[in-house]
Image 1 (cartoon, rainbow over the protein chains, first blue to last red):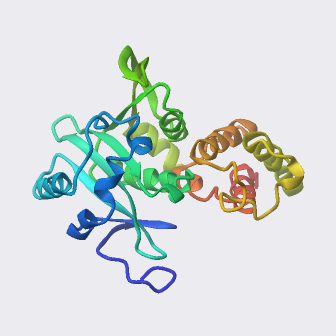
Image 2: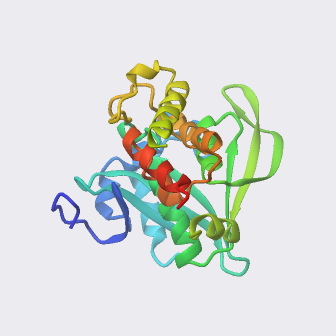
Length: 192
Length: 81
């Protein structure tokens, strides 16, 4: 039960304001697919060129079953079970033990940093303590101040910069590749 | 010590959110500061770490949602017993 007495649905990890659960088919019927068509939300994503559809979202949802190279989780509010976003560890490499992190807070009224921060803290804990990954990677366009600030806050380190790799709104932009290693994360989070 | 922390936290919040320090109350949060958006929230966390020369844990970070809680977390992190 959440603090408000509402029954959480199949919670995978619970935090202060939100919990993670496996995506449901009813998420596909909700606004999930619309987030990936929204111009503002997808501006800095590499999937931003074509609109998403409910059919494509359903195909993606169905592709998740039995795929152990990606962990996709719905971000849901504890107070009213609202599906507000999605977070993932993709391209999981079980030999070298790394994965790529991604997040979308689709419901814009929750886009104040508080929920994304909470979700990031949770998924990093899952990556390093449940899945025992050694590195979590991310990449962002240099002009994406939101991603830059989020990754800096969680102490991701810059691995390299690919100059002028992408074009955003007619302007060349650099792609910044960052990573967070397990040892650094453990040292910071399991300190006395 | 606590008053000093309180005062410094409000100074940092005033700077990050670009509002007069008098408008920063104990219950100030994303719910009542209009300029508290996602980027400024993250800038606030980093600015607090620099101001107090500390490094927050991920669990600390998710507590930093209003002035009162920010002061409490920093007081715990800077406490010398």
